[in-house]
Amino acid sequence: MSVRVTALILGLSASLTLLAAGAPAADEAETADLLIKLLKVGRKVVSEHQPLINDASKGNKGFTQDFLASQVIERFRQQTKIDLSRPNGVPSASILLSLLEAEKEVVDEAQPVINKQGVGFKGFLPAVFARKAGEKFYRKTGIRLKLTGTEYRYPGNKPDEFEAEVLRMFADPRHPKGQPYSKATMVGGKPVLRVMDPEYVTPTCLTCHGTPKGERDITGMKKEGWKEGDLAGAISLTMPLK
Ligand code: HEC
Image (cartoon, rainbow, N blue to C red; front, side, top):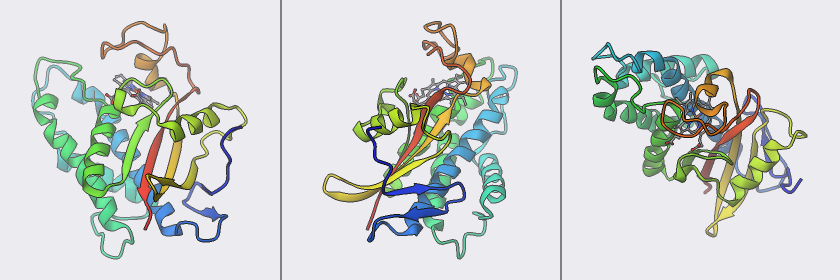
């Protein structure tokens, strides 16, 4: 295996093991973990409402930024016990709220598309939502949050060298399924925390990413030929460290 599993490894509940002295504060690793959860929750809400969003017979769908926010806040609270509607005292509140705001803005800007009557599939799907939210969040905070994969569709999702290496590690059957990888490293001479969280193919992905490989999916792109359980890619976070 070419990637050394040193640095630190994020556990399921943001519990973590710091191996090196002077390694990034536990706070930052925990914030990273929460940000990834918050992005996933938003994407899940979009995914669950895909049939509504794709409903050609409806004009106004009610899938507004406030609706998204209420769903995201509630699910995030259930998962983490953090209530973003009452952020006072939450350690990383301002960063988390920036991501929530970015997610809301994406849904708000897409209202004309989402509410278009007479059109079924409109190109508003979970991966696009996540990408745009990540881009907005980066502009707000300088923290990069992106989806990536070895077989990427969107050019901006292309893995960088670090990401490509970790993706190879995730694809190795010896890597425990679902285990994230994180590392404190230098980018452009500055210390950063990098975290990658692997994602796997589930039945809902197959209409677009499944078989037969090369056939066009509903978005007009070529299917990858993935099967349930395959590594699909990862969420990748790069956070500047102080
Ligand atoms: C409706 C079709 C559709 C479905 C269903 C779908 N995807 Fe995608 N996926 C796309 C498109 C289109 C993109 C490119 C998004 C963009 O423009 O950023 C993408 C992007 C991605 C990416 C980012 C890398 C890249 O290709 O740019 C990953 C990872 C990914 N999908 C995994 C999944 C997984 C896992 C599922 C199931 C849980 C899934 N997708 C379901 C269409 C789909």
